[in-house]
Structures are given as structure tokens and as C-alpha cells.
Amino acid sequence: MNARAGRIALENPVIIGRHLTSPAPMGPGKPSLAGFAMHLLYPSDPFDPKRPDEQYLDEYQAILAAGLSASLFSFEDFESGNFRARPALEGGTPVLYRGWMLTPEGYRELVEHLQRLGAVAFTSVADYRDCHHLPQWYPRLARFTCETRVLAADANFTQALADLHWPGYFIKDYVKSLNTGSGSLVHTPADIAPLIERMRQYRGQIEGGVCVRRREDYLDDTERRYFVLNGQAYGASGEVPALVHECAALIDSRFFSVDVVLRADGVLRLVEVGDGQVSDRKEWPARRFAAMLAGAL
Image 1 (cartoon, rainbow, N blue to C red):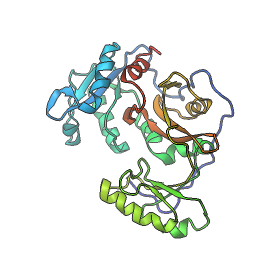
Image 2 (cartoon, rainbow, N blue to C red):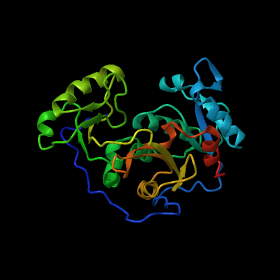
Image 3 (cartoon, helix red, strand yellow):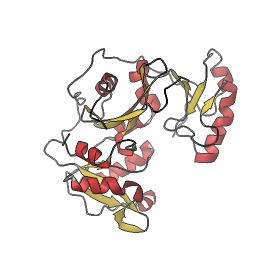
Image 4 (cartoon, helix red, strand yellow):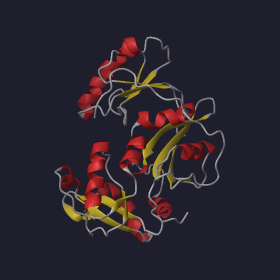
């Protein structure tokens, strides 16, 4: 991953000022997968290649119960450059990965393995990156989320952010924040570099660069996760806010997650977007998640 020097120039967001009640269209040039049944791909247990990893066991069972098919693969073998799906994948099958987070480069390797077997990745490499990395989706959704600046991991944060006087600074790399120790919220730009060093110590690397986000006060226990599949937004309870429909219209990916939360003033705000393949279900029951993928909702 190449860290960019200085602030990344962010294009002006394109906003559709309407609420959608129908699925958003897929972008031009996307191959149609109509007529093909979706096939799921899960990491196997490290000690039993015929069993899904414990993290995904209930979801895997729900997927099969919903009438979908699934294969397992050794994530450890994949990291070593070897890939084998059990059962084997059929040619032309659209494959939806559900597993551990991958860098865009790692996801590209997975897609290439699928292609060599004649299968088709449900989510393209470009769409994975556009949902997985904050600087990719932020320009389109900036009005819905907290103000953000993107810097290189080795930037002079005090100098680069001298024009800001925010009430606090929430720090993450292109993908994740720090959930251990004192967390990712700091009070001044001078506190950012030490936090970045702690992130390196805990996680081993910084993916992409650093996203500096303006602190907003949110109400406890109001964050919810929604999934968008083929342009249609779904919620764990069945209800989907207008904000999520607007996000669904602005992101051109077949499958992604949208997290929203209530701000202290009662305004619903976007927390983040993520690629659906590597997004936890959070409050979603496994059976409902499987029903969504099976087209039964």
C-alpha cells in the first residue's frame, strides 16, 4: 500500500437529493450475473478443512438452510499462495466471499484464484477497494458523515491541521481505528503521531494512510448496520432509513455495508461504509442475513 504524501485531494461529493424506494442501478460495464445462483466462500477451520471457521459457523449453516451453496478454503494456505475450494467451484459461478479482511491487493489475489478456476467474483476488485477504503467512498458521501482529512502516515499533523479547531480528532487508517488502550480519539493534532505509533504496535501496519475525522457526539446504543445487495438496502429489523437509501444510490457496488448512528442533536449520520464480504453481521441474525442473500426478504 502506497502512503500518499500530504493531504489527498478529495473531489467534491456528488449528491442525489432524493429518497429512493427502488434498487439503485448497477454501473455501466458491470457484467450481468442474472440467472446464476450465488455461491458463498468461507474460510475453513485451521485444523479441520471440512468445517467452517468457528467465527462463521452459524452463518454457514444458515446459508445452507436457506438453499444456497457454499465452499470452504484454507485461509492459511491462501496466504501462502495456494488456493483450493471444497467443494470445487463450478465454471461461471458468481462467488461471494465471506471472511477475514483483505487488503485490496490480497482481494485481487483471491479474485485471480477464482478466475483461474473459471468462477466469477461477485464483487470486483475496484468495488472492493471503493468500499473498503474510506478515501474512496468519502467524496461521494461527505455531506452525510463527519468532516475528514486524509494524510500520509508520516505527515506533520500539527502543521497539516493547523487551520482546524475541532472539538476532537478521531483517527483511523483507511480501514480501521484503534479499539484497544485509550482508543482512537485525541484532543489535539499533536496527539496523533503517538497514536499512529500505537496503532503500528498493535496491528503491525497502517493500511494506506491516516484519516483524521472531526469528532461528533453520538447517542449510545443507536448505531445500526445495513447491507446493500444489488442496489437494494436491507435492515436487520426490516426498516431502512432514507439516509441508507441515499447511500445505496451513490455507491456502485453489488454488496456493501452502511453503518449509521444518531448524533446528539437527533440527526442520523453515516459512520462508515464497508465491503459487505468482510463486514460483520453485528445485530443481524444469521438466518435473516442468509435470507437476504437468498433473495427471500
